[in-house]
View 1: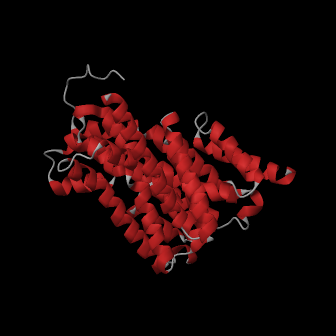
View 2: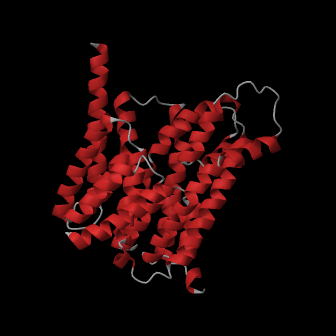
View 3: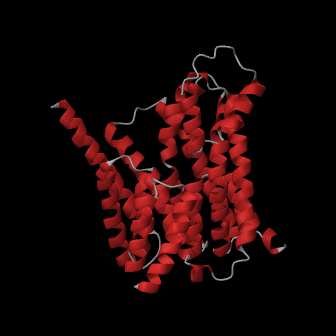
Amino acid sequence: MSMDSITIPASPRQEFAAGVVHCLPIVAGAVPFGFLLGSLAAKAGLSALDMGLMSALVFAGSSQFVAVELLDKNGSGGTAGLAVVGAILLVNLRHLLMGATLEPRFRGVPRGRAGLALFFMTDEQWALALRRGPELTLAYWYGVAVTLYLAWLTSTVAGTLAGALIADPAAWGLDFTFIAVFLCLLAGFWRGAGSLPPWLASAAAALAVHALSSGGTWHILAGALAGGAVAAIQAKGQGRARDA
Amino acid sequence: MLESLHLDWSVFAIVLGGALVTWMTRIGGPWLIARIRPGRAASAALEATPGAVLVALVAPAALSRPSDALAAAFVCLIARRVPMVVAVVAGVVAVVLLRRLL
């Protein structure tokens, strides 16, 4: 990644184009993924319009998978709906940390413009922006953002339209798709052996609460709290080891 | 075609709620960091949350029967070595075969 020799300031148009080009490999990965989400949404009874609005307004892949899975299982009414919003929030809490690391880049950007730009901050957007370093421009940011946004919107809607054609997904093992997708997303969060204790704590808590509550979504909150607590304890332990 | 344009209002309410909380997590990072420095424990807990949520989501379903648990273990093994779409398709094929065998 040695691009620091370039010193000529690029025009906004060049910056935008660079953003588009840099995120093309990501688009290649995101399109099948969006298509898959759309077909699962169709299975959960969502229309293409429902899915399109979700992709356009939430625009956060992992949390949309979680939302569609919960809608499929528990429906959208009353407390089940609130639980979906809560689950979306929990999955997206990591944005707080990611955004915090971008704060130096957004210092000096007017609040409204920063708020709009940050709407597009996905894991991939964040990674590319961080890699761009101090030379990050809003034009580059939007080159990435617009490309990812259009790819995500069209692929999820297309998936919903196509998925409605599949009659019985379970007969093809497609009910396992959710599990496989979540495990792949989980693998992306692996940070070495230290990730294991919070995950085991989460699994134990989730299984216990799930067995006791017979369905619903409380096991997700239980798992999140147990995992977070164990991670906090780990961090404290490490801090103490370093101080000693 | 008309069905694909059907809007479920309860789903739309969830979408609006989800959109609002997600946007707040996106603008909240720079806003918060300029005001408070989260301690080591708080950032570790925050960092671990998405993974913990995913684990909590899959654990009951993945461990519901031996065939699914084996297929889930298989997906975990290959997830970091192959593209996601490949891992998902391989996992689905594995679960279909294992459900037939076990």
